[in-house]
Image 1 (cartoon, one colour):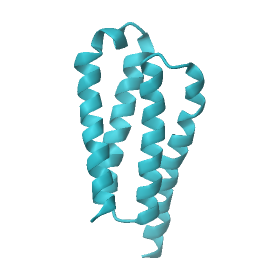
Image 2 (cartoon, one colour):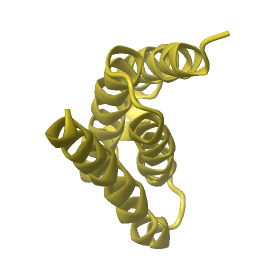
Image 3 (cartoon, one colour):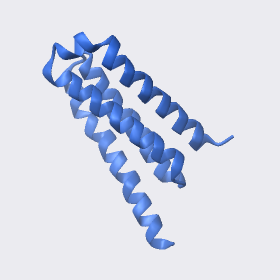
Image 4 (cartoon, helix red, strand yellow):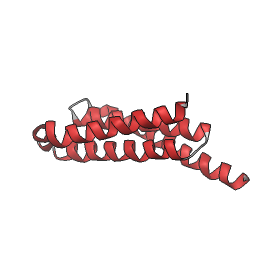
Length: 113
């Protein structure tokens, strides 16, 4: 069982499903608040980009940082777009920091090879 590929598949499927749901099922609701659609689109884009990265690029810690970071980052944005309290926006950078750490881990590992 390849946990990294399972995680990539789950992140990717979730990103596509939520992207489509936002564009079609929640279009009226998201358009009622100016930044809601932008939050939804950003969350979906980051989820999908990191799903591909987790599946394509080997590296345990890189994949962990990307997976956890994408979930935290995207979930907080999705929640705010659906009307959750804006204080969740203070948690979003934790996910973003983890995404950056994943990229820096990839950078550091690549320097050693």
